[in-house]
Length: 153
Image 1: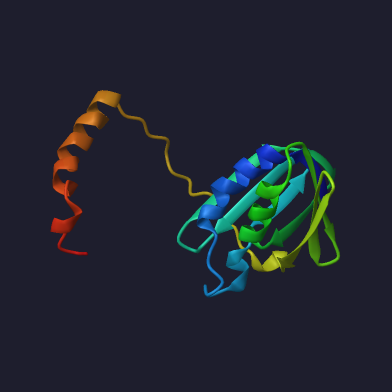
Image 2: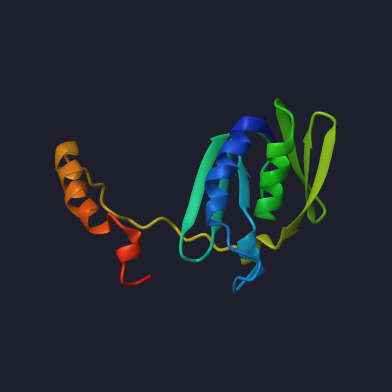
């Protein structure tokens, strides 16, 4: 797997998905990873903590298709720390190599086949009138106005 893209685009996508990254103490260590998959000129990212799954797809310059699961927080921190400009990400052996400017980083990976991404639920599209939604929020907001009064704390 190998691709190139702008650092900011990758950093923005990672910031979205790593919110669902599981901790290292989760039932499976692979949940602390981010699944990155390159197909053509498209990069799909996914994280899960078994309660939620967050996915994001961005356009990239795909060089080689493939899948890898690097450590999510470390990968995110490295991408954010790089200088603006082009970033190249490549799987070399059991690591993901992140290159940008004069910097090169190796990020350890998990076994990609251990990371299970469930297909999205087939829920019907819903929409509501903005005024009705605002009215419903006003009715509920009164019940949660003070966290100190919450009996289930």
